[in-house]
Length: 157
Image (tube, rainbow, N blue to C red):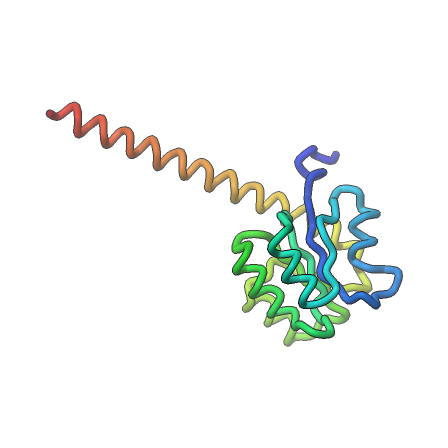
């Protein structure tokens, strides 16, 4: 069963322009549970998109011609510190796996198994929405706590 909140994911895609027909963008479009917010193919396009887009999730090709995947992640974390970030890698080795964990990327998907991107997007979207909901409740709890403290102070006068 598809929940309605899963249908509204807006994804920023950062991938090589010369990708074969199985591109990240094409997969997300065919997935139908996600919407492509914007697609960037190089450093300049990526930096412009960061200023004008409001994605919910970022999916980036690990190997870009003019910018390294971890540089993309670092810049994304500056603009969107809490957004889920997924690397798409051509092949996974121990170095990439370790760097993904160390760099605080949320997930990676191997490009020859791109169909796993759909469930990864769903899982991270739910996690992100839950985290936002917890933040909202914490803020409300803090506000109530402040009001209670004010009442205690005013009542004691």
